Image (cartoon, rainbow, N blue to C red; front, side):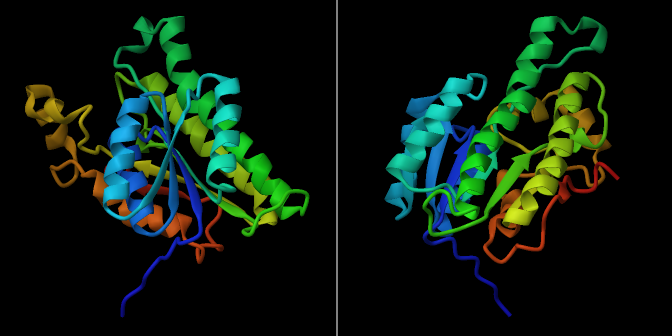
Length: 260
């Protein structure tokens, strides 16, 4: 038995799409037929990804977005819907971190993490959610009522880890934010779920796994390995599929069992 998830005719906005997980999410959605809006601050990187997706037969568009700037969020979402169409899928992926003991965290460190991971994620989802709600209520045009919002949290949002305590706090807030949105918006056909990745090998941390500290961390993992970005494809596709109308408010750990 085979199962095909077809996102043809859907518009997906992916934040933090210039590298890492965001880049992989964008490619996966495009392969499934969605028109993908690539959002982030590094526009040149987005343009490179745009060219790659379109060379492969996909449909991609670029919009500059700084999730720490409320005006930038509103402008990016408005631009995306004007240029591409109403947003049916949001992959709320932007995130940052620092590594230090809690006693060494400065106010700037704290704001740096929470402004992106929590505040930024909230207002991106709010801006997209307002438009989804308007369509569901019949007060705005659109061919697809409801929607799919996937907030990218982290297994650090369900299991506290040393040296990244503030990051853990920010992602725990994203988990609870997801449940609150699912509760308020579910009645309008808007499904909001959280994806909590474990340790994934990306360009940002690739060299770390070769260091002594990285090797020690790998040795702590249940199956002594880190994941690859494509290991999240199937979970993402399940959450954004048209058929996933019965999954709402879920917090799904894709961490190879580390948070057990």
